[in-house]
Amino acid sequence: MKAKHIFTLSIIVITAFLYSCGGDTNEEKSTGTASEVILEEPTPVNDKGYGKFQNVELSTELDAKMIATGQNVYDVKCAACHKLTSEKLVGPGWENVTNRRTPEWILNFVTNVDEMLEKDPESQAMLEICMVRMPNQNLSDDEAYGVFEFMRKNDSK
Image (cartoon, rainbow, N blue to C red; front, side, top):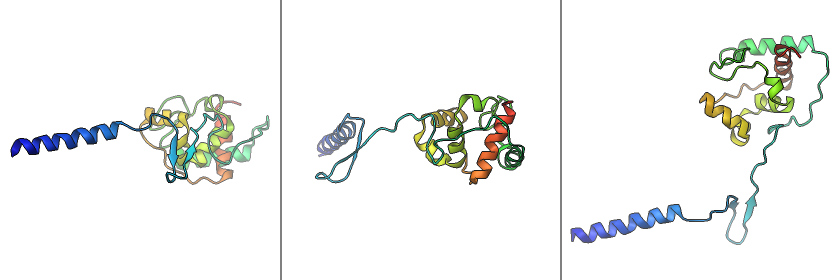
């Protein structure tokens, strides 16, 4: 009787294992019913990130008022985790960030951090290095532009 239970349990475990390992090897995800299958395209790599900022035009002159706004936001919401040098604190250092990322990507990251960490490969790579998820700081557009302008000043642009 005991052998029969072991055999039955083994069949169940093997079946569950095969079922969990099997399935479609296609990378596309499908949703909907059997009669209505909707394929989701893989998310493309996007150097502008994900969010409402898709076409930012920069002036050659730095805006002192926006820099002051950005400095204030940095002091209150950012300085605990980010240094103005290349040194990593909790999050990455800000030195040369405006040379490494597009304005759109930076603005989308600071205003739409949850979606960026969900969809953007570069954001996900930073999360793997820093191992701490950046909290949403709920920045207004003006505060975000101020932070970006402060970053530009920090990078001597």
